[in-house]
Image (tube, rainbow, N blue to C red; front, side, top):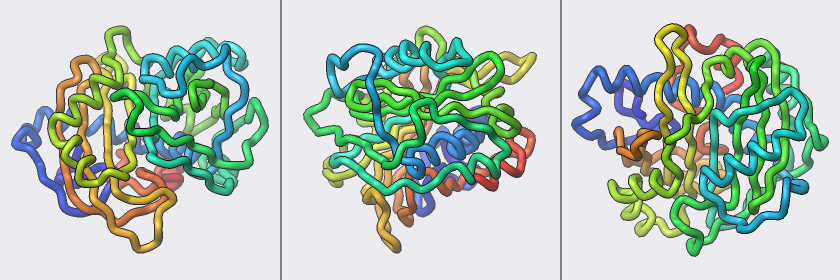
Length: 306
């Protein structure tokens, strides 16, 4: 999903845009997803890259450490029953597919959530380290060792569940002010949403495979959203944003990397747009997104947090 100038939503640099981007009606529809993803990134991606992630016992032992979106969603949905405030329903999902495991010292996210006027609770205690397991190239297409699932409840609270090496566990619950305002726009993934193997296969067909062949140690980010509530106008359909990057994790200061990204329709698996280019590498794929968060959707505190 590009900005009007064609920039990749979580990257900066040169891009190549398909002819379909010149369709103003399609461009207006695509504006909605980066707006919400950028806002939720203030909560979700900060938790992924800044708080540290450990996984505790799951609801039943994992049958495989590499899960598709539908499998991870089912795991997180089942595990969410043990967290107060439910029922919880999956509305947003992020997967980091890394060729090597990532372990980073924890940076305190409490100040971030406090600045956003949010309240939060760590059901299993605040974790000390970031631990994202590697996903080997032998894993099935669309399967990942690490998922972060954002679920919401009837009062617009958010529950972030990690699904790591096949085990689901509650990470943090978030409520209050700006966070509830953002969550209020999110809707549950509808039945009929396509699974991640279809999403990733579509992305690979339009250039993803070529990028991975040229950059065999690339890291992949898959992110999906169930839709955006438009009030009386209903809700948008689910969409996915997939990015492959040669940037290392954690980022190296001054590093420049190549990227390939694509936006995919979540009900059909059809490609909406795709881009390639170079970017200055930063901490995490979307900590400093180039998309503009519209004031009508997210207030200044959420934008400041991003």
